[in-house]
Image 1 (cartoon, helix red, strand yellow):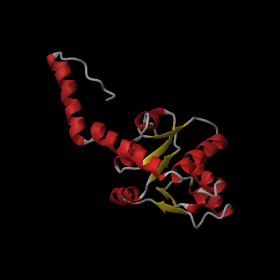
Image 2: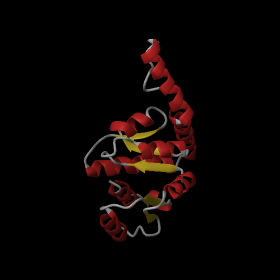
Image 3: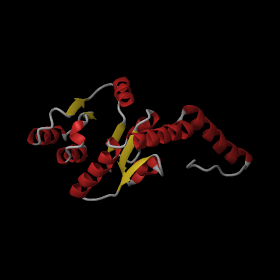
Image 4: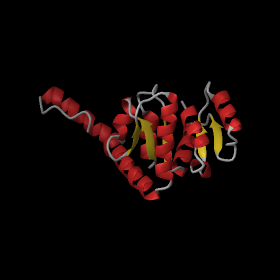
Length: 177
């Protein structure tokens, strides 16, 4: 649903002073191109298209804010990548992305119809672009959370705790921390 963010930009002169990059390729491209042309957003939007994983990482490290309006991708891997890259994230309050963002690690907007999602994303993104200190605070909290709980050493430790719980009957680990 990248259309949500493009429409948020279309509605907001504040957001149009910033750059929106959409990475990836999909069936929505024609719709996005049409919205971009209709609202004259060519100077503030870029449809990057499909790129390799290394390039995705480079682009994420150059960005400050990650908007993820999808409600279909419940695994939230890309949100975790954005957090690890130190981006302030805006997600729909639903599924894996909302769980990852939690309190103080990004902004969750309520699940809604398309029109209300656009408005919610617009307001959240405007709040961030006018408040760099908030972006910095959320990005740091997101980055620290990703490293603490989702780095390879953290995953290895959690796996050892699970094995210990199973084989040695130790206390059940908290799977969400």
